[in-house]
Length: 169
Length: 169
Length: 169
Image (cartoon, rainbow over all chains, first blue to last red):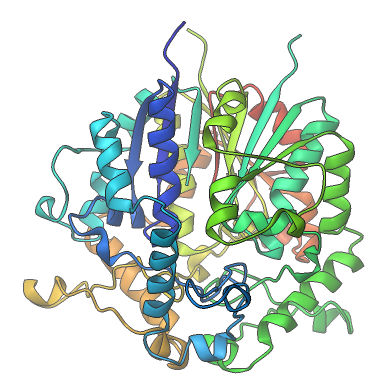
């Protein structure tokens, strides 16, 4: 049987936006897929050496459950629907949300972004940084991890055009 | 002719983000497609018993037209470009935007999310809740409607790898 | 060899959300693909005669690098992580971010949205406005450019079901 192919365009650079491409890529890879990810726009943040900076913002996303990852069970079950008026005006609210999500992820035994990215690299998932947006945002190659390639949309179509699944994330 | 397959990954939990997966799934189903939706991250909100809670946020989305669904025609045509400074500081602005959108949807005779979801269930669209994010966000099975399955990304790839169209929403 | 097909569903109406569909469509077209774009929800903004209105919002997107497109090199390299508290309360902050991004795009020699859209039209990329959301948002045909078609999701599936790549942007 022909090897299946998964092509991903990763455009989000938030903590919650970083999980889907790496989880899908590593899962597909474990299932025997040949996988390529094209990182463009804010997705370039996922290729930075330091991904500890990735943040999550509940602002403008009323669907995000804000739960506390500590305390008694009844306390953990509360969904703190913090009004935008507070979120937008209390400096550091984004950092709080980021800390809570990271703590929850750790408590639940879910892998970190760094671990998932390493898993993808070991599984030989091919990672391509979009040269145009690298230039546009003024990134330098030294900002990014080793083992990645640089190219344009045309390069990506070579692979995507033959893929079984192509996702724009 | 082989039956066509549509695979959807639904990751958004807002009112406006809820329409695309259910509209595309019910349309494809009516056209004879075999359809599966994998709900993950904020998309899990779309499987809750009470979807009346879904909200829409104009904050950080300057592309959203804010129009009044009542009053004379000239009044309805105005696009109220409310500055973020007001949106973020007037408590209940998100609720106002949600009410306006729901009223507009109803006035135009568009189906509600609940109706579209029921339509998908009747059409035997297979709905899968991502077990990892169910655990991560602390949801319980009793939060969700009946008739859905629980599984991981690997389970979804079985179907997606054979699909004609695969969308990440 | 059979001509390859790219199908795109464009749902975003921001300045940064406008680039991906037009860049991918024009690139694919240059590579010999047959391309169709279905514009729905906020994506309808991309079909308006005046796309000069498109804005970008850093609010709720902590991944957006905010860099100054002028001044000495050390100054351009700073990433101005403006807190939400300031972004949300200083009127015109969205306009500032939009101006900075447009200036950066121009300085880097990247094409404008108008240029890319024209390129797509010349390359005979088929553009379809979603009739349901046109009605829902109260748009009129005179708001949009000439040379586009109007239809529903069913019309789009005709093409998407036969496509090699289908992207939901």
